[in-house]
Image (cartoon, rainbow, N blue to C red; front, top):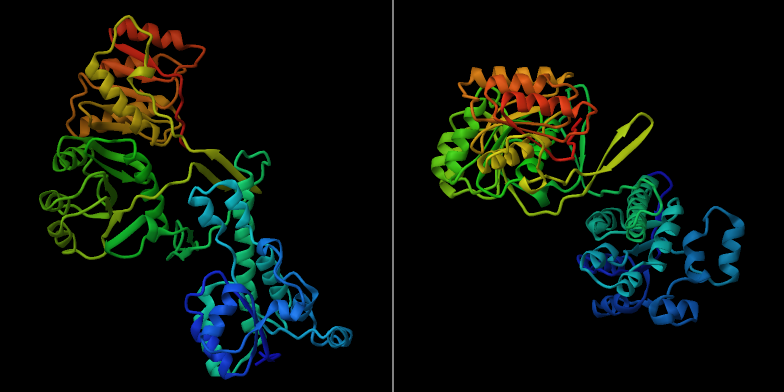
Length: 508
């Protein structure tokens, strides 16, 4: 082992004592002198191990209600002293400071206290000062000191103590230091975010502790990693691991389905809905969602906002899909899906989702609020001579939810709470419209009486004219073009209704 260090003295002061007992027994076996504070000191003594109170080392009691316990030269000197510096060693001897070779310290539960809804005074008291200083000091001096800043590392240290008799290598100490600095940086980020809730300081900080290495990124030659806790959001019942592209589609699926309260199923391909329908029963929703575009549905991501029963499962099982997400499944439905391997079956758990979005761009990062606005009939301002019917208003509301989650430029056709067709991601809105008409006809939909929504305004009246001639009877657009009146006049000429919302839903 390179630059081995024998653990002779240890400082242990932890909030969580889970799985600490085996460590104490090993240190006792090795004859390591242990220094500790408060509850940890009592815990160690109750295990039958000798322990020295830090206040006996420093000759100062814990003061200020426990705010100051370990902040003392006799503690930090023993941690920070460089063993190969003669002057450091001389000062340790002069001031009777023991070399501390092992520091086991964790941090007060700051984030947990914030999430509990505690008041500001309680939150502030959970900002650790001594603990984080001890961790930084020990990690800084990793050449001579072992630092454990998390109970997750107890097993690893226990194995080292057993197999190496209390001696550690430089690589092991560097690894523990790396983990320690990860913990302190995450902790500091959480504290900053608490103080910066009003975003007075416009800075970008993110710290996510959990990660999952993906098979690859968007393409096989790209590496991919997911940072976050997928296990908190999904319970996987069946299938392989989610890929990078799966995750992108699943994110889009979750955002879309959350717009709907009635029983709804959506089918997505490359983040866009190729089928969606709301019905009284989930099986009907599946049948009508699939009818929108059964070709594109092949290999797609399916999401439901209701439990999947056996009858619905047998219908879904007739096609190949990549991922299926629902809040619950009957036991029989699960058995149906398990007949074929690799398909991913997920139960969605209730998790609070972030309200900010960001991505890397150029030499930095862009961030924005999520688009959490959706305009209902009350926000639809009729601008034409003809008023939309109540039924058309409901269909416009349905279609507007879909258009919001479809790539720009986009046009969506809907009727009776069912997507009939969409034109997606075209460089011209007219092209999107023509694409939607072609798809609707291809799958046998009658557009007479259907409604049309657009994610942005019409710069010319051609879209309104083409849509009306195809059978569309009501149109929704945000408005805002200098030529809005041209589109309104065309709608009046064609005898169809138009509403404006004042809200654009670009999605790039």
